Length: 75
Image (cartoon, rainbow, N blue to C red; front, side, top):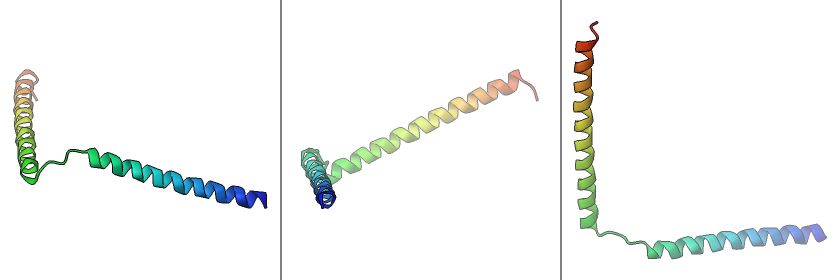
């Protein structure tokens, strides 16, 4: 009978630990700064533009290096 109580106690601790974890998560989520819809749209546009600029720069660098290497190393 002692092992049954031990198993029930472990299950109860596990349940309490999970509940405590989710209470902590909820508490932390309340502290998060959530941007407004307009801020979110603005930030998304800024990120998109930055990604496009970096992609174009990398493409230009790649094309330039390919051109230089094709002149140095003939086929």
